[in-house]
Length: 283
Ligand SMILES: [Zn+2]
Image (cartoon, rainbow, N blue to C red):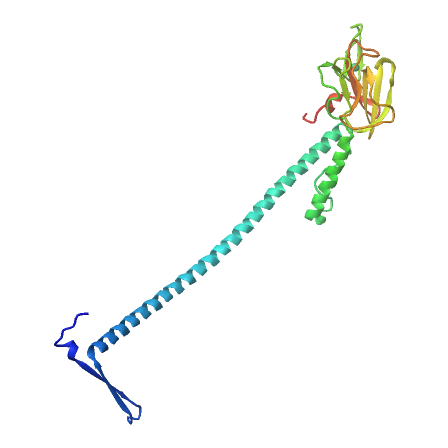
């Protein structure tokens, strides 16, 4: 700081300190420049304090506004979460309905083939007891029953090959004259080709049987049996328990046969039915 030697440097200021009852007095004489500086400091400090207070006030307002914003956002999130839950439950409901339709279709399919007691899925009969646990328990029981039943239904191909003769009336394959009822499906093959079981069951018969030649009959329960004729060899014995996919015999041409093929028959309550219904579940 620059001084003007003739002015500020030589000026003094006297400060009197007087007690409240005017009895004690005291005084100090200081350079005026110190008093001026002190005043400047006080002014600067007051300005700074005001600025700090203002800043605090602004911050306080900003924080309060932010708190309000957060509160309103939380409310929005809560609403959105509830909306999502609703969407989820709608989505789940739709899927359950699809499962129910599938179960109905399977029931219908098995019923039409005479192998399953028809029941409308439609959820538990007692609507008042329709808790989630009840509904899912119902579907579990239903699908367990279907799985159990389906394992005993001869499904799929016992042997892959070209179809030679279908279920139903056909010309006599030996003479070509007159017609006869063909009780099964003839699938071409070579002697020794594997013949597989098409469902769980018990071997009821594995023996030579006239026109059928070497023949296997498997009892699947529920009135269902599968029959495999013209075999060259047995791979199971009477009384054996078998599962779908097990090798039970080999293709041959024994009995009333014009060449190596498998005669495949499905019987329901001793009546032959068209095995093509059982080859796949796509139709
Ligand atoms: Zn045949």
